[in-house]
Image 1: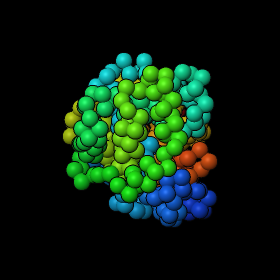
Image 2 (image 1 turned 60 degrees about the vertical axis):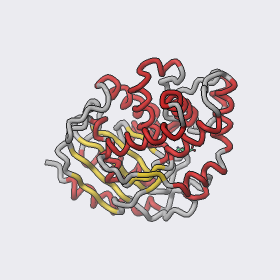
Image 3 (image 1 turned 90 degrees about the vertical axis):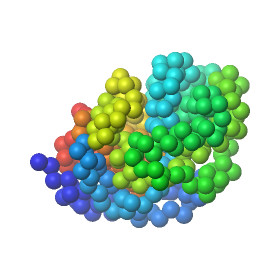
Length: 308
Ligand code: GLN
């Protein structure tokens, strides 16, 4: 029997020296004042048991973790056709890079870099016919996988990011010029940013990700959200692309499919066992939570749980 409680307390102590080494995502003004000392970690097992430590009920901006949810939703609607517009290869580039997109003619490498998630948002707007319906359906989907109707977005983070979203607008404009965006650049970027500004706690995130640890079916409610083969592919992409140009590092040190966000959150999946979420706002140079990554590395080392 693994003593999760003991492991989490050890981790919370061991990561302390790492908390101040990260840098907050100050390119989003509303996130610039985040407290570097914040830390939270949550585990949800298949029988619904949860283990938590730190500020696990504090909601934070999920940012790029939302890309897992929008990709799941879009895959559900458009199936494999989606891959005509977004690839499935690691980019080896930062999450907001423009260079590759130019020479690869507006087709993003994968759904987890910004360009890819912007295309995914475009496919959702085309399906739901309006930006409002797209956001509402995305939020409803997140609320239903998290089994929590109170989850919402943070309008201050949204407004603040939109004002400084020059790179995302550049990515969207570039894709529009190549014919890989059907809706208006402004509508797509605004909706994408609204998804990113959804706020959740580690406890809620670890609950929400459980269906991906169980082939697309929530093991607690038995609700099915996606096919087993689609769940397999989302996990594969999280492993190979979920941490951008540090995805190799994450696989090497942590050894689990995972997805990070510049709000400081990371979610990870232990197939057939559990889902884990961690939060600490200080980021490493790749834009992934520094103490959060270390906490997950400690978790897989101490528990012996990894996919390798
Ligand atoms: N909203 C952020 C952006 O578009 C998301 C990036 C991230 O979390 N890596 O820059």
